[in-house]
Image (spheres, rainbow, N blue to C red):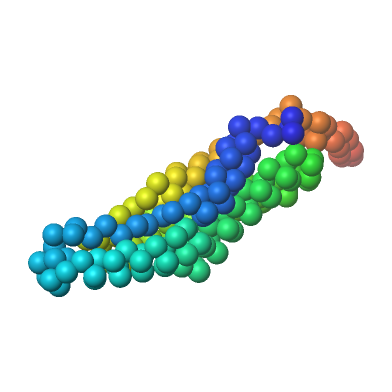
Length: 178
Protein backbone atom coordinates (compact mmCIF):
# COMPACT_ATOMS: atom_id res chain seq x y z
CA UNK A 1 0.00 0.00 0.00
CA UNK A 2 2.93 2.35 0.45
CA UNK A 3 3.49 2.27 -3.31
CA UNK A 4 0.18 4.02 -3.99
CA UNK A 5 0.50 7.67 -4.88
CA UNK A 6 -2.12 10.40 -4.76
CA UNK A 7 -3.52 9.60 -8.21
CA UNK A 8 -4.03 5.92 -7.44
CA UNK A 9 -5.62 6.70 -4.06
CA UNK A 10 -7.92 9.24 -5.68
CA UNK A 11 -9.05 6.81 -8.39
CA UNK A 12 -9.54 4.00 -5.86
CA UNK A 13 -11.65 6.18 -3.54
CA UNK A 14 -13.69 7.40 -6.51
CA UNK A 15 -14.24 3.84 -7.74
CA UNK A 16 -15.37 2.65 -4.32
CA UNK A 17 -17.63 5.68 -4.00
CA UNK A 18 -19.15 5.11 -7.44
CA UNK A 19 -19.90 1.49 -6.60
CA UNK A 20 -21.46 2.52 -3.27
CA UNK A 21 -23.65 5.21 -4.86
CA UNK A 22 -25.29 2.65 -7.13
CA UNK A 23 -27.07 1.36 -4.02
CA UNK A 24 -28.39 4.83 -3.12
CA UNK A 25 -31.59 6.42 -4.50
CA UNK A 26 -30.94 8.50 -7.62
CA UNK A 27 -34.41 9.72 -8.67
CA UNK A 28 -37.73 10.35 -7.01
CA UNK A 29 -41.14 11.56 -8.13
CA UNK A 30 -42.62 14.73 -6.74
CA UNK A 31 -46.11 15.46 -8.03
CA UNK A 32 -47.76 18.57 -6.64
CA UNK A 33 -51.06 17.40 -5.12
CA UNK A 34 -52.86 20.54 -6.21
CA UNK A 35 -52.12 19.95 -9.90
CA UNK A 36 -53.19 16.29 -9.67
CA UNK A 37 -56.49 17.25 -8.09
CA UNK A 38 -57.06 19.93 -10.74
CA UNK A 39 -56.25 17.66 -13.67
CA UNK A 40 -57.64 14.32 -12.51
CA UNK A 41 -60.12 15.22 -9.81
CA UNK A 42 -58.64 13.21 -6.96
CA UNK A 43 -55.61 11.92 -5.15
CA UNK A 44 -55.83 8.33 -6.42
CA UNK A 45 -53.58 9.14 -9.37
CA UNK A 46 -51.05 10.67 -6.99
CA UNK A 47 -50.89 7.44 -5.00
CA UNK A 48 -50.40 5.40 -8.20
CA UNK A 49 -47.60 7.70 -9.40
CA UNK A 50 -45.79 7.60 -6.06
CA UNK A 51 -46.14 3.82 -5.82
CA UNK A 52 -44.81 3.42 -9.36
CA UNK A 53 -41.84 5.66 -8.58
CA UNK A 54 -41.01 3.82 -5.37
CA UNK A 55 -41.14 0.47 -7.16
CA UNK A 56 -39.29 1.48 -10.33
CA UNK A 57 -36.52 3.86 -9.29
CA UNK A 58 -35.32 2.59 -5.93
CA UNK A 59 -31.57 2.84 -6.53
CA UNK A 60 -29.01 3.52 -9.20
CA UNK A 61 -29.18 -0.13 -10.23
CA UNK A 62 -32.86 0.34 -11.10
CA UNK A 63 -32.86 3.86 -12.50
CA UNK A 64 -29.78 4.24 -14.67
CA UNK A 65 -30.28 1.67 -17.40
CA UNK A 66 -27.98 -1.15 -18.41
CA UNK A 67 -25.57 0.89 -20.57
CA UNK A 68 -24.87 3.49 -17.88
CA UNK A 69 -24.41 0.74 -15.29
CA UNK A 70 -21.96 -1.16 -17.52
CA UNK A 71 -19.92 2.00 -18.12
CA UNK A 72 -19.95 2.88 -14.41
CA UNK A 73 -18.83 -0.63 -13.46
CA UNK A 74 -16.08 -0.50 -16.10
CA UNK A 75 -14.80 2.72 -14.50
CA UNK A 76 -14.92 1.06 -11.07
CA UNK A 77 -12.97 -1.92 -12.43
CA UNK A 78 -10.35 0.29 -14.07
CA UNK A 79 -9.85 2.25 -10.84
CA UNK A 80 -9.48 -1.00 -8.90
CA UNK A 81 -7.02 -2.37 -11.47
CA UNK A 82 -4.96 0.82 -11.20
CA UNK A 83 -4.72 0.58 -7.41
CA UNK A 84 -4.03 -3.17 -7.37
CA UNK A 85 -1.45 -3.02 -10.17
CA UNK A 86 0.48 -0.33 -8.35
CA UNK A 87 0.15 -1.90 -4.90
CA UNK A 88 1.38 -5.32 -6.08
CA UNK A 89 4.37 -3.89 -7.94
CA UNK A 90 3.23 -4.93 -11.40
CA UNK A 91 5.31 -3.94 -14.45
CA UNK A 92 5.31 -0.27 -15.37
CA UNK A 93 3.50 -0.97 -18.65
CA UNK A 94 0.57 -2.49 -16.76
CA UNK A 95 0.36 0.45 -14.36
CA UNK A 96 0.44 2.92 -17.25
CA UNK A 97 -2.25 0.98 -19.12
CA UNK A 98 -4.42 0.89 -15.99
CA UNK A 99 -4.04 4.63 -15.43
CA UNK A 100 -4.91 5.42 -19.06
CA UNK A 101 -7.94 3.15 -18.88
CA UNK A 102 -9.08 4.63 -15.56
CA UNK A 103 -8.74 8.16 -16.93
CA UNK A 104 -10.64 7.32 -20.11
CA UNK A 105 -13.42 5.25 -18.52
CA UNK A 106 -13.80 7.69 -15.62
CA UNK A 107 -14.28 10.54 -18.09
CA UNK A 108 -16.75 8.54 -20.20
CA UNK A 109 -18.65 7.46 -17.07
CA UNK A 110 -18.89 11.06 -15.90
CA UNK A 111 -20.27 12.22 -19.26
CA UNK A 112 -22.75 9.33 -19.54
CA UNK A 113 -23.98 9.72 -15.96
CA UNK A 114 -24.25 13.50 -16.34
CA UNK A 115 -26.36 13.04 -19.47
CA UNK A 116 -28.56 10.46 -17.74
CA UNK A 117 -29.01 12.54 -14.60
CA UNK A 118 -29.38 15.99 -16.09
CA UNK A 119 -31.04 15.41 -19.47
CA UNK A 120 -32.44 11.91 -19.87
CA UNK A 121 -34.20 11.34 -16.58
CA UNK A 122 -36.58 8.39 -16.24
CA UNK A 123 -39.95 10.04 -16.68
CA UNK A 124 -41.21 13.57 -17.25
CA UNK A 125 -38.70 16.15 -16.07
CA UNK A 126 -41.32 18.26 -14.32
CA UNK A 127 -42.16 15.51 -11.79
CA UNK A 128 -38.80 13.71 -11.50
CA UNK A 129 -36.57 14.96 -8.68
CA UNK A 130 -32.86 14.19 -8.34
CA UNK A 131 -31.87 12.55 -5.08
CA UNK A 132 -28.51 12.65 -3.30
CA UNK A 133 -27.31 9.40 -4.92
CA UNK A 134 -27.26 11.06 -8.34
CA UNK A 135 -25.09 13.93 -7.18
CA UNK A 136 -22.74 11.64 -5.25
CA UNK A 137 -22.49 9.31 -8.25
CA UNK A 138 -21.53 12.19 -10.53
CA UNK A 139 -18.93 13.34 -8.02
CA UNK A 140 -17.50 9.83 -7.64
CA UNK A 141 -17.19 9.32 -11.41
CA UNK A 142 -15.42 12.66 -11.67
CA UNK A 143 -13.04 11.60 -8.88
CA UNK A 144 -12.21 8.39 -10.82
CA UNK A 145 -11.40 10.46 -13.92
CA UNK A 146 -9.27 12.95 -11.98
CA UNK A 147 -7.42 10.13 -10.23
CA UNK A 148 -6.69 8.41 -13.54
CA UNK A 149 -5.39 11.59 -15.15
CA UNK A 150 -3.34 12.37 -12.05
CA UNK A 151 -1.82 8.88 -12.12
CA UNK A 152 -0.86 9.36 -15.78
CA UNK A 153 0.84 12.65 -14.99
CA UNK A 154 2.72 11.36 -11.95
CA UNK A 155 6.17 10.08 -12.91
CA UNK A 156 8.12 8.05 -10.44
CA UNK A 157 11.74 8.53 -11.38
CA UNK A 158 13.22 7.53 -8.02
CA UNK A 159 11.75 4.00 -8.01
CA UNK A 160 14.22 1.10 -8.45
CA UNK A 161 12.53 -0.07 -11.64
CA UNK A 162 12.87 3.43 -13.09
CA UNK A 163 16.66 3.47 -12.69
CA UNK A 164 18.41 3.70 -16.01
CA UNK A 165 21.99 2.77 -16.64
CA UNK A 166 23.08 3.92 -20.06
CA UNK A 167 24.97 1.41 -22.18
CA UNK A 168 28.69 1.76 -22.63
CA UNK A 169 29.62 4.00 -25.52
CA UNK A 170 30.61 2.38 -28.73
CA UNK A 171 34.29 2.45 -29.54
CA UNK A 172 35.37 5.03 -32.06
CA UNK A 173 35.75 3.81 -35.62
CA UNK A 174 39.26 2.84 -36.69
CA UNK A 175 41.36 5.54 -38.25
CA UNK A 176 41.47 5.48 -42.01
CA UNK A 177 44.72 4.81 -43.74
CA UNK A 178 45.57 7.60 -46.07
